[in-house]
Length: 370
Image 1 (cartoon, rainbow, N blue to C red):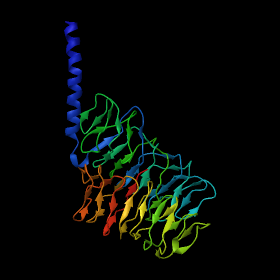
Image 2 (cartoon, rainbow, N blue to C red; image 1 turned 180 degrees about the vertical axis):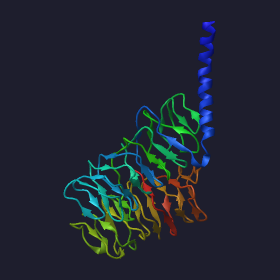
Image 3 (cartoon, rainbow, N blue to C red; image 1 turned 120 degrees about the vertical axis):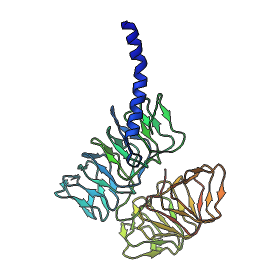
Image 4 (cartoon, one colour; image 1 turned 120 degrees about the horizontal axis):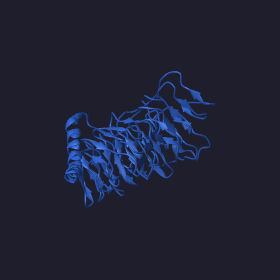
């Protein structure tokens, strides 16, 4: 009798587990479904991940590398800013604890060793670097996209389905139902966290390559063609050349007015392009370029790396979509030229070699991946 009961119990375990998963999925309204970080360790970002909507920190979050906060982010009272950090354009000479919540309205960089207090808010457009650790218990809102190449450890759940063996996602997966991630999982570059996401206590930012004040970050080798307009408020980093016809500059400058490039310009790491920037024909975007403010495409612009066009971007007629690109969820197996303007209502991932035609627009959060 005991043996039979033992067998029945063993058979009942997977059935009970399945029923539990079904009940959990059924109990979560679709409009409010969230991803839970789960238990047993942190989920690691294997590549840069974009924040598609405002996210909240549930507990103190350590900053392991210099991280620049996007316009609209909120540093909660009690946050500790390491010496050398920049808060709304002001550099701190010594470590400072914020006495009240501070909203980011200008360039703000949290130096390595800073700690963001609970209830701080990371604004849309922020890029979390590879190596960022998301603590167990992190909850991601419906609409979060787990990029292709992400590794889901055995024993986790994705959209209600139990993952029996460690699995690598072959295509991007949008969260719409119960999903539980934890230790052993890694999220690939291109992952996007939807608005309403909450990072659990113990989350650690490895660093972020973004800029505050409504601008974007450009890296060494990014070329703005003659005729491009650099928006007012843009920051031009040391070593950049061609802005206003000048030779490589010896000190960073902030533009007080929109500046038209007359002979071509090369911007280096640390430069930031404010909203209102216009990309002229011949512009080349290299891997690592990020736009946090909207930019207009006034002429043919080349994508030197895989480019994630944020929701709200527009691909003009004449844009060439390289093979392997995904637009609004549809995969392109061969290079295709768009015959009409296409709105990226579901976002777009353009493979390297794609070219953006004149008349298009890049929404805030667009980034060219390394």
